[in-house]
Image 1: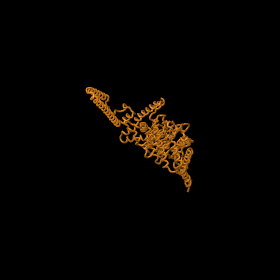
Image 2 (image 1 turned 90 degrees about the vertical axis):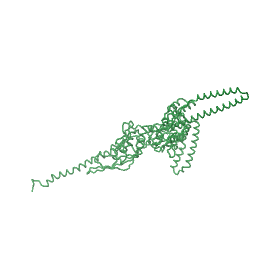
Image 3 (image 1 turned 30 degrees about the vertical axis):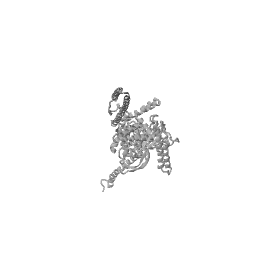
Image 4 (image 1 turned 60 degrees about the horizontal axis):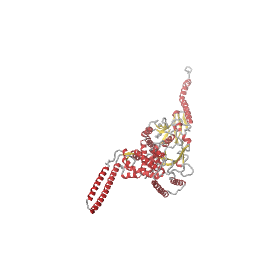
Length: 614
């Protein structure tokens, strides 16, 4: 039977087909959108020079991308200068790929799979990098640490706000290293980096981080006395003989080529330790690590993209394996002898040198935050430990510059005059009495009077000596208990004393005025560099200086200076002057902004060995 000329087939055709088409449209739309986003993602990957495996689920509109994850490290600053000092030609524009701003040595450590719907959800995997290598690389390029950012990171850790700046551009106006979101960090510290070519203000000719340059002292500035030079030479010969004996008895016979090279290197070090002349103007560069000094090299000149080094052994110049990658293209075959200032258990020499060198470098353009000065040395350097009266007795300070500490004794002139008058009156009276005696009695009385006067003079002399000795001892005891000065004030007065002694010696030897003026212009900072230089070159000087520092620290820890300590200072005042310069240097580094920054840097390096960069 017909229904107005339309059958059931017509109804299904006119209604069912459109409904079926409408049901397929979402699938077609998902397919189209997925293909478009997949094309965008592939274009982004291709533009960023990234190799990835992509898969598309057109039904669920899911795009799966599998990207490699890398661990990176900076290139060698001297052997790969182009990669180290320049930026990448094809940096990635994908979020999480800020690390591609630089050229890195990469090592694939795995893959990361992402599932996204849209192209703007794509994230490039962050890379693993050692925190200290990243910071030292940015410092080497010219980045400036942000003290506020490091202090905030140290105190709040992973709760530090995103975008907090840790490193800034050389002009301090832009952020170079900031905190990034923790989306892909897996619990690690997440960072992002920004850099522009014009921000690179350093080059291969500059010292890399962890290195410090020690200037050679001016001729005659740290020159010991003639008798001290003889003693130093004798002690140096004895120390060399002991070192050679220990080396011959303790070292086994080399079993392979590497051991032979190590043994040969030790003998080279022993040979080269006396090769640097005392009047040399060649600077020394030292590498300071977390374990103290690693390498010390003589610096001949800086020129044309490198630091040229002199060959202390007189042979051909070649690369030093211990300093490879540190930016010294022309290096001497052998470094200076530094065994006497290495950090070792049982001796404090290496600790004193590393602490002073760190303080010297912390307040310069090279931030030596890699070595942490021990807390007991920092506390010692901050304290007031030297009585001002002792400096007066040693001639390093004038009593008018110190608070009143000594008892004022009346002058003995009146007492001596009255006693002289009394003795004269007694002598005249005795002589008058002798004139009234017979001749034979007069001679006996005169002899008795002269003996009595001689005994009186001896008694008066002994009494005067006893009084002077008693007053000297009283003055010394009062000096030991006088008001204490800190290391900075002690160093200033001690330096004036030393320069005055040098000037008097030069005048006595007929020296020129230019050298006097040059010595007078030396400040504590320069003098500290000279002292450190001398510690590297002369191990006898270094040993004496460290023993003086140990004695100083001992009396500071035990409650105060004793009479034996003051006698030790009086017998070797010059060494005490050099020790005070180093203590003042360490004290200044604790109060400087750079010093606080270095402590924050050290603590953050200790907390996060490896970070995620992206």
